[in-house]
Image (cartoon, rainbow, N blue to C red; front, side, top):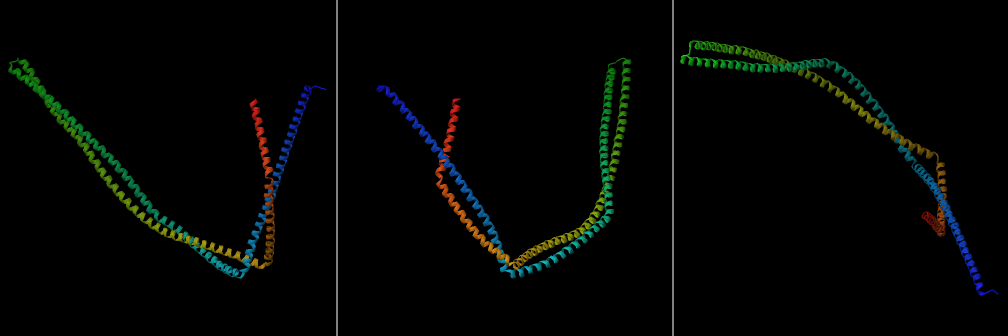
Length: 406
């Protein structure tokens, strides 16, 4: 018999094997359960999507049938209304058509008459403008000629003014030169007289001092010479004064002549300006008269064109009334002539209503089935979502572990 101690390791080994087997079985059971959960969840999602597609398709068909029914109901209601009021529609719309035709004819005649009158007045206006242009041409030429003379005379006045300013400057210069020349000649006389008095004083002192005869004679000769210089200087003052005054007189004469020329030029310019104003006034009066005549025709033409536009608008309105009434008459006659179409449409509407009601029942049934399916499979779909989230979490954890290990 083996020893009790020898049998203890064998029992421990057998226990470990049993626990490993239990863990493996548990893992297999868990994997099997997870797979079953995924299959159930996927199947539930697929079934819900299929039910939703069937419901959506049924609703689209219901909408299509309802739209066709509404259109045919509107057509049927209109045909029944027209059939019920056929005599009144024919009477009323026929009267409108008759009145509209009369109005169209009357307005068309008005348009043609007004446009014809406007065209005639436009021809008259063109002829009148040509006539006025021919009549005004010589007056315009005379005015332009007078304006040219006035402008030329004005330029002459400007030139004369410039000449007067030049002559005034010459008088001023001559006067200043005269004053300077006379002042210079007078200073020469004063200088000579000063020298004469100085020599005379020396001669008197020499005579009083009993100077020798030769010195006295020399001083007497000097006095005679200075006297001659004084007389010569005085004569020069007269000559300078006379010549300078002559220069001033000549400049003043030239200034007077230029002022006379300016006055003459100004008179001619004033006369030319008056003539131009008169000629321009005559031309402006004739031009205004011609423009008034043309304006009268232009206003009449504009009035006729405006009336023609109003007649065209009335014509178009009458045409619209005519077309609308004619369309109503055609519709009434068509409905009245085809009662079988109304009967067919009435039967079709009845059948469509039944089809819509039937389709509505299908939609309601599919909607209830989809709601019931969603309720029954909510747990499986939530479990699928949870499983997906677990898988995603595991993948994220593995990625994190790999990144951390690196």
